[in-house]
Amino acid sequence: MKDENTICKVLPQPKDLIVFLTVIRKLSFAAAAEELGQSPAYISKRIGVLETNLATRLFHRSTRKIVLTDDGERTQRWAMRILTDIDDMVDDLTEAQHIPRGFLHICTTFGFGRKHVAPAIAKLSEQFPELEVRLEVFDRAVDIIQEGFDLEIRVGEDLPQQHICKMLKSNNRILCATPDYLEKYGTPQKLDDLHNHSCLVLKERNSPFGIWNLHDGKKEISLPISGLLSSNHGEIVLQWGLQGRGIVMRSFWDVKHLLEEGKLVQILPAYTQTANIWAVYPTRLSHSAKLRVCVEFLEKHLKGI
Image (cartoon, rainbow, N blue to C red; front, side):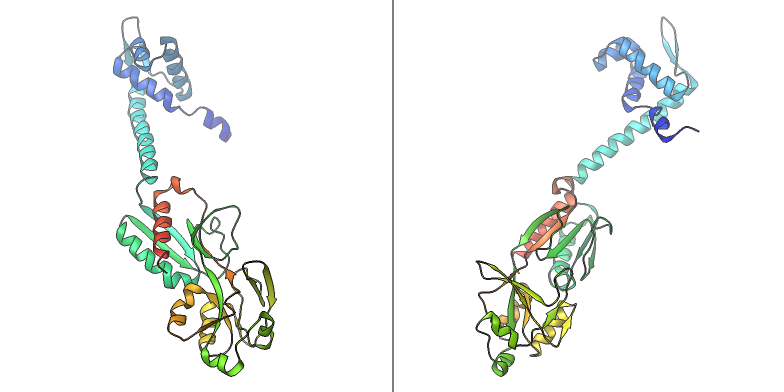
């Protein structure tokens, strides 16, 4: 039994099929050589290689003319089909780099996905009707290659080094609480004051539990926090914050409207946590029109949040 490498070596090459079809069209090795810019010896060699690989004779040759054998006629039909399929493959791949269409598998987090990515995808689908998009949401780390995703929209600075990461929008997490909570327990004036407050603890993705990593524009500060309530879901923690159960740290995009409505008040505004919004993908945008238009669309859409 031949091994896989041996089988690959005897497969006919597209260049030999082109030579073969040119000889048929020109009815002459010499004329085919002239059209292809090669020598008659080259044409004869390539036909010989093709006949060897196919283990058959393709032409009846004489000094005056060449005639296809029965196997040569069958080979002609297959050669035309194969070369057409190769052309179609190249055309399809070329179009895929310029025309956004086909299936796109996207993942992101629950809160950001529901509030911002899902509405953006709906508008994207309306603008590009040949795109089929599946959006999945998680509050856990995702291996986009292993799990079959084309694109992840990620909030935060825990980025995979093996993939391409493009920042879609700058964002910070801020500390805030309800006016009622602050009236009852006082407004913290410095970071150390947080030790005397109930902090709503979130364990999300790969973030450390019970640690708020903050910066003041000059240095990074890792602040241990504690509280009676903790969760692995950001929307639950925010809900508790709105119920006056403690101080919460949330992305600005998540609480902007609550600050404007006076339902929350930002505290210690000099201290924030960087949590930019990123597109993470394994393939360069120039290689995929569907991925490129999606990333560009999301970048434009997220500027308004």
